[in-house]
Length: 280
Image 1 (cartoon, rainbow, N blue to C red):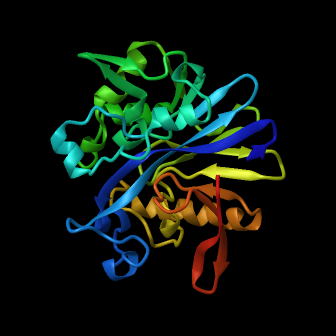
Image 2: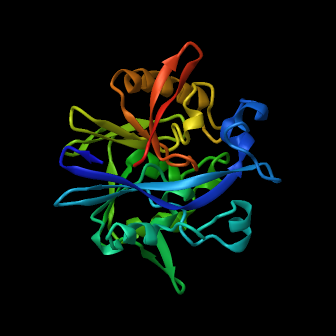
């Protein structure tokens, strides 16, 4: 897809499975299982979908998937699956090498969003994208290094501390444009300082939703993850954004939807829902 001077496309990097109840919070299983069937361990399959924004000067990667550093126990718990897709092969299919990446926009530092940014070379941690600058909200960086008991397990220091150690970290201070036509929206419901890249040329607008709306099934207002630190703030953020999404026909990219990469939204008598699937 072309938006202004940028070529924008998604990269499939694999799958992970998380507890369906945790993914949908107060919504009963009888409702969410219609669209997201659970396995025998009550887990639903989720995509690990990243995005590339490319022009003549920059090749920007948004998030980096889960990576390959998890031990066997955690890989089993989360059902990590790279049998079909991986970050490296997905980029290679588009003619992109890790060295080509100039910038990585990290929406937040949970293990399934930044794990692929760092890898083990024998016993040494190295950056997957050695020439890139990694853009993270300063509030999120602080939170990741000072997590609460509720979300401590989501932050694995080996995934992000090597970025700072290598001098490749840029801490952003709130919302705003970081490159022409690329703006960060900053959210606080899921975790403090989660940033959503919005790309717009005045005609077409695309929003990478990260964990504000992780799948198309999470478009309805009450469908909010139990993983969110502040679900009522998430609710207010959705109430603020979705009317504009509908009015201006934004394209939403769903980072974790295993069935569809992107889509538009409509409002009906029953609330907000997916309007049209878009291949991206």
